[in-house]
Structure formats: C-alpha cells, structure tokens
Image (cartoon, rainbow, N blue to C red; front, side):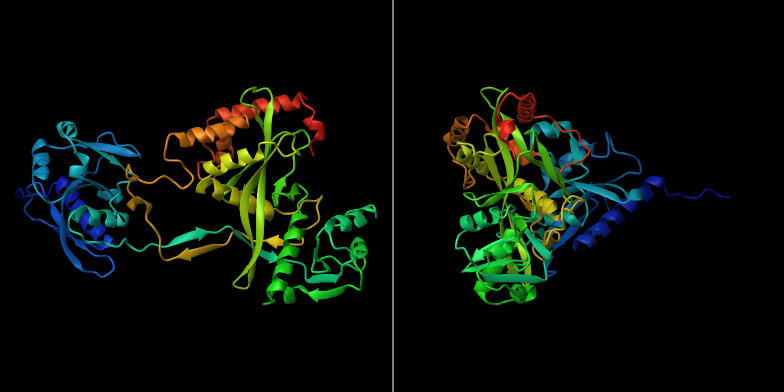
Length: 498
C-alpha cells in the first residue's frame, strides 16, 4: 500500500489542548476563538460581562502549552516551564495581555499565568522560567473574574461587578429544640435571691432552675410537691410552656427568657456563675490540671481550664484561665435561640478572681480575632449539645446545631488584593509603635506576655489538619511547667480549688 500522510500524536495533543481551553472559556461565560495560523499566539478570548451577557470589546491573547507528560519539576503542587526567548519577546512586545494555558488534556487539567505578571523585571525575563502553583492558578470557571480584571485597562473607569456567589453563614445562635412542657409560678415569699437561698439551705438541700421576677417565683419544676414550695406565698399555678414561648407580650417574653437562662445555668455542674461578670465559666479541676472540652463538629475541643506559668518565675503559676460564656435567649421567627458570646475568666487559685483579671481580659480582647471567636463558639455549641451521661439527669432544655443561613451574595476571597501600605489599622490597634508597647505593658503588670494569651486563641483550632503535627509554642511549655508545679503541690491553691 502506498505511503500516506499521517497525523502526529503531538498534533492530537495540541488540538485537545485548544478544545479544553474553548470548553473552559464557555464554562466561564467567555468566548474563545482559535487561530488557524499560529505565530506564537493560538487564539484570543472575547470577554463577556457575567450578568448582562454584554460583549465588552476586551480581549486576551492565549498561547496553549499542552502535554501528555509531566511538565518540568511537576509535583502535586507545582511545576515550572522554560519559555523560548523569541516567544517571550513576542508576548511582551504587544499591548494586549497574553496568558499561557498549560494543560494535560487527557486528565482534563489546566492552569494559567499572565506573561507580564510572570516576568515583571529583567532578572525574571533573563531566566525565562514561569512558575505555576497548581492550587491557585487553575484554569477553570473560578478564573473568570480574574480574566476580566486582567483585560480592563486601569484608566478605563469600567466597573465589573463580581460574579454572584452564594455563601453559607454560620451564626452564634443555638436553637432550642426541646423544653419542659409546663411552666409553674406562684406568688413569691421572698423578694431577693439571698433570702430565698437561705430558706432553701435551711431545708438541707439546694434547688435549681427557678427565678424571682415581678413578685413571682417561676420554674419548670413543680412548686407544689418539691423543695421549691418554701419559696411560695400562695397556691402555685401551672401554664402550658407554649403559652409563654409563643406570647407576643414583651414582659412575658422577658420572663421566659430569664427562666430559660437560669435553667440552663443550673443544668451543667461543670459551670459556675460569676455574678459580677454575668457569665458562666468552667470550674477548676480537682488538682488544678488542664481540662479540654467541646470536641465535636467543627472543633477538636479546647483547653477550657488550665494553669499558666509566671513569666518571671516559670516554676510558679501566674494565673489560671477559665473558658467563659455569656448567653442571651431570643425569639426570632417563632424559634427560641441561645445567643453565644464567648468570654474569659482569670483566677489565682481556680476560684478567686485574679487581681489583674481586667488587664488580662483587656489584653486577650485586643488579640482576639474572628477565627478565635468562631472556634470558641463551636466549642461552646458542642459542649452545650453534649448528651447527658449515666451520672447526670437529662437536661430540661435541649439544643440543636448552630443556625446557618444561605445568602445569595458573597465575596470571592481571591478577588481581594493585599492591603495598601497606608491602610488604616484595625480599630483596636494603635498605629504607632507605642501601641504594641502599651499592650506589652498591660500584660507585664499581670506577669505574662502576648504569646501566652495567644495560646488561648489558637489552642485546638479546627481549620487545620487534625492529623498534622503541632509545634509546641513557648506558651505551651510554660503551661506545662505550671502543670508540673501544681501537681507537686507547690502551692496551697490545689486545696482551695473546686
């Protein structure tokens, strides 16, 4: 048979690379036009406004680099490519942006780089090497917005609205899923909690889950046949809980919110109410050693109580930290929620408030950021949601998972550039060098430093790889030193702790 002309394998690979670029552009909402005559440019992209579909008369030139084998130095994370000098001179000489699209058509993978950004100076141009990050430079529909901004001249004054995206927002609202069916109330025999508590103590036992409000004593527990009967100055009444929970009367709503709050406070023996701070915090452990809690969805748990070594004397405990929580019950859309506001408590011996508690609290609030607040919120949500064990009674108020909402507006974080050098500092930061010195001065008075407080914010962060090894910080070493000291019985605080 006579010899016939053949098509090389590289030709097929090249055509598949062009087809992959065209398909990805369509997924982005743009139009790719290949060129049949190739002199270092394989085609161009007509850019389209995402919402209106208007053709913007803006183009990007494209050069395809398709291979069925790995690129130079290719790993799961990156590779590099050495450009031909003539091609590089050609791409840099024009006034239209040029992008390089590297692809493995057989595996349907593609990445991209803008030539002028890849070669910003003489040194990089002399090397002729373009470096690709396979995670951040994917050529797919997520690159559509970046291509638009690349093609628009800085002086054009054209505003291109970001492509619409949806986001799921997690709130700090914990829905109440179960509560007792009956509210009990009666005229109160006492007007203040001190006298009422003394009357209960006189009976030899404490009772929880009750409040005094507007001359009444209220509880989810029966007032007729229980210890709480001593608090009543008249016959108790019973009301269906739904009458109170669904009431539109503001006074009734406030009473019910108070009752929910007090009932929850008394349902967790590991928590202690701090009257002055108006929050709940974890009690000290029996030997003043560290304790973790809050493990569950979205969190590996965190150290909710633990010692911190003195900065001046690492063999002495400087203070103990207690994870704390402020709550507020609110009815939204017919559903009752517990609003979670994480807080902190600092003591000298696991019980007595530290004399520099305000300084420590001020210091940690200045270091607090969204990831830390989010982490502590999940810890508290998991803790309040934990099932009762064999040694505790079922809790009268039960919670669901943190409420979420889906919004049809969001921000693609990749669209954000670095903050300008002259950007204003955050509200709680002093723009002068003295701002950090001021924070250090505040903490020095409490015999600690920022690194130790940062350990509270970073402990057990949930966003990282749970299996990854964690580097031990100086703050963790200090806490370990304090733990060893406390276990040796070097202070009297162990006997005073709860």
